[in-house]
Structures are given as structure tokens and as C-alpha cells.
Length: 218
Image (cartoon, rainbow, N blue to C red; front, side, top):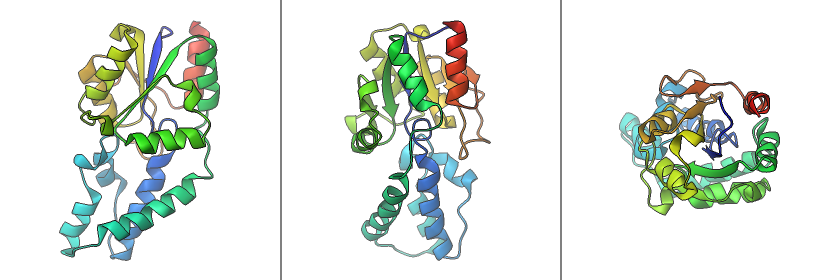
């Protein structure tokens, strides 16, 4: 791997371990109804948001009930925020971001989440200073596996695709990167460890491993 001129980061599951926390909030709701939500089912929406697979619609189809989703989601959101508030950036992320900044590697984020979600957590983590720009679904881009977010980020950077690197943790994300024609490094986490990453250019198992690889190539 050559050192890229720019890195396009996914957010959820790459920079902050949000996906496991959000999954657990849904799993508790399913358990309340006497059902089990599997990681395999939930993986359908990882990286893509609920437009691809909706755990709320799935629960309703299983139970035949109608739910007050405004109340249910508010309760889940409170649980999620409470748990995430004590978390830090993913292991290796602070060191990688600082190294990239020091070596003039440009950094942006392309996420299927909302801008408010990404921006608020970056501010909470004091990490917003590392990124030139954030591209999110609420900016009007189609979610992954559409390549729209990554193409917008690459167009903004004004750098050739082969000189950029995408970091992803989900199957939908690496498919989006392949569709965009941009090299992609897959770094699985606990939620995506068994996903199909055959569309990725390469695969590592931590941001520390990526940092060490970049240092060796610098």
C-alpha cells in the first residue's frame, strides 16, 4: 500500500463504536417482545441506514403490532447517548488522525448517518478539527452501497481516485467504494467481523495496523 494523498473515513464503526450500541438498543426491544434480533439480520442495514433494512418494520411484521415509534425511538436514543457518552475514539484512531495531519494527508468523512449525528459526536470527542469536510445522507446523497457519498468526497478533494483511500467497516460500505472506483481498506469490528469484504482492496484488523503500515511506507 502506498501512502494516500487523502483518506475518506466512514464514521460509525470506524471512528466510534456506535453500531454495537445501536444494535443492542434494538435487541433489547426485540427481547421485550419475546423475540431475538440477530447480528446477521441487522448487518443488512450496517453502513446503509434503515432505508435498506428497517428493524422497526421487521419487528412489526413479526409481531403484527403497531408501535409508538416516536416514544420507542426516543427511549432508545436516550440509552444510546448515555452509553456512547463514555466512549472514546476507536483504538488507534487518535494516533492515526494525528499522524495523517502531521504528514499532510487530507481527511474527510463520508457517512450514511445524519450530519447532526456525526458532527455532534466528533465535537464530543474533540475530533472535528482533523476533518476538512463531512458528507452525510442528510446532505442529499444516496446512502451506501450507492457510491454517491464517496464520489462527492473525492470530487471535493480534487484528487485522483487512485490517490485516495476509503476506510470502511461494513459490506455495504466496501461495495459503495468499489462502485465509486476508489481503493478501500476494510477494517471489521465486532458487528461486521463475519461480513463479506471481497469487494475491498485490502483488509486489516485495526487502525493501529493501518498506522504501522503507513509509517513503513512513508
